[in-house]
Length: 287
Ligand code: SF4
Image (cartoon, rainbow, N blue to C red; front, side):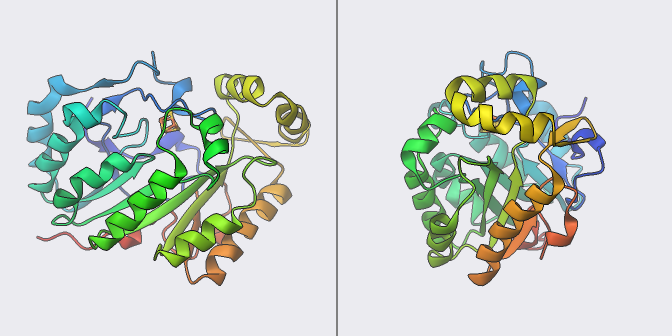
């Protein structure tokens, strides 16, 4: 199995991403998000471990790149807490920055700003996930991740260095974080040009975590997902009209502030005003 592989999550026809590759520097993740999907298919997910034994393979695969987008990462966060000490993702970035590729970083961590020297000399964009601007709510939703305040500061710092940044308001959980008005106003004011959003899709283990942490909310969501909801390609989704309403609200808020907008795995590509994942922000490859 190559380390840098084709990005094609679940092959269920709901992904509208442009063609790209993906690379996960870590297996597992320690942010502990209630809604995490990856925890349902990566073994020992909370036991976050760097793929340090694979550095020679990464160097070999990197030499074969031909200007593709490499998305880092999609089944884990490339900046878990240990990254601040061990710098494994940083080493991977140094290797990839020497190759012929364009980099997309997807993270919830402000540790990414440490690597702004590499990112500012490489065709890249950072997608920071910020699901709410309420630090207290985020502590419940994403208990071990840096606070929204820290993440918003990271967005500012990256933009100040000329590194393109999009923000993922992802996922929207009805009755929890479904009105991102103040968050979008803040992001627009600091210069963010693209928002990606999606709705929460329960899997057995993330539903168990959410039900334990927010029992009253879960009771209200249960009929929406499990009686009135849709089943698409192995996913359980909210009813289509509700998804359309929630995501159109985010879309209108973004467009009103001059931002582009895309939805992630919703089967609603007509809502997209640009490449859904914000990859249009990545400059062309250098060679
Ligand atoms: S940051 Fe991503 S991979 Fe890590 S726990 Fe949260 S949702 Fe899962």
